[in-house]
Amino acid sequence: MKEFRSDISGFYKLSMDERRKLLSELVNLNQDEIEILNTLGYFKPSQIDTLIENVVGSFQLPMGLAFNFKINNKDYIIPMVIEEPSVVAAASNAARMARKHGGFHSENVPSVMISQIQITQIHDIESAKKLISDNKDQILKIANEQDPLLNKLGGGALDLELRDLKTGKGKMLIIHLLVNVLDAMGANVVNTMAEAISPFIEELTKGKIYLRILSNLATHRIAKSKATFDKELLGGSEVVEGILNAYEFAAADPYRATTHNKGIMNGIVALTMATGNDTRAIESGAHAYASLSGQYSPLTKFALDSKGNLVGEIEVPLALGIIGGMTKIHPMARIALKILNVESANELSQVCAALGLAQNVAALRALASEGIQKGHMALHSRNIAKIAGVPENLVEKVAKKMIEENKIRVDIAKEILKKLSEGENL
Ligand code: MEV
Image (cartoon, rainbow, N blue to C red; front, side, top):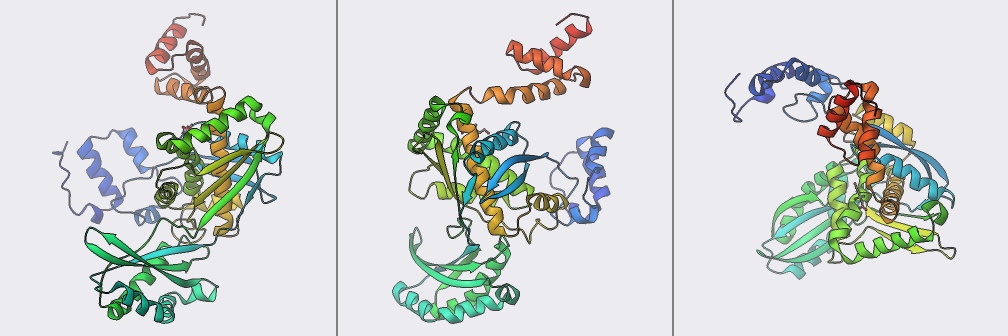
């Protein structure tokens, strides 16, 4: 075994095989582990090696399908990539409850991204603002020259917003360049545009520009979806009352709102991941949006209709693309997009918002009735049995026994297995 040190230089210059060999010497991988590293699945080595740096393998996650979604009168099967049991089933279940009342109604999501330009060292902010406004056409022209194709297709730089900001280093002038990125997530194009217009803006304002980067708080790209969930299918008026109480709890308490929104993100992130979109961008945007009022709040709202059914609404920024980035490179993301059958980033975001709402309703329904653990337990218990080394033909039996005993642990699974192999009738 090699001396373990982390200051390894030039790792990226090695071939993938050489990297794995070096790694296995460093951390003493056994043959099975090396084989797992070697399994790239559907990725070609040349493909995966260029996605990020220092690649040694590929990390797989399950992709499941959520059913029953009807959104704006169109049926969807939604691919979800997530490691957590019960999430996919829960989404399908809530979608079934909404389907009875026509499904989800999602609004159009404009694909408008914000790129921020930070101007410092300006003595007279008001005159700088005027200069920028007077030269807006020229600034947008320079921005649009960076992507003539986007322009031809009907997208491109649209407008500027000017914000003055008090900071610990004095006043700054922040420009928001608004860009219609059409079917892309848009990070590349808006960053390129922001960099391209900055020299002209520096010349105009005589200020010093530092950052030129998109904002992940995509407030011009808000997805909204609404649905009515059937009272009886939810479990009756007592459960509905519990959901309304859960919502008010989240609206009043950031500790609860965080978990409430986590449930929403179970759906949103699983679809973001399945379609090869940037999950971190979506997460940071959603949580920032949830805090815009000054208090971290739930991303959904609930009320009753005249018949006592639950009406749910979601509002969340969603910067999702169906072209660019990983969406077209990742073989499974391409299949996910085919399953979804969406024609635009707008449509994908409409589906994603509906999924987030369904996921939230499913979680609140479980919490307001039998509790969340019941649904989790069957799968969890099977997983624990497998971890304990229970052979495939006995997994179900051991899992069931652990649920009966209300003790789902590896040591208990081993104990049950031992009793079974000693011929005990359980
Ligand atoms: C678990 O992944 C998500 C929940 O905690 C969401 C919630 O509490 O609303 C069940």
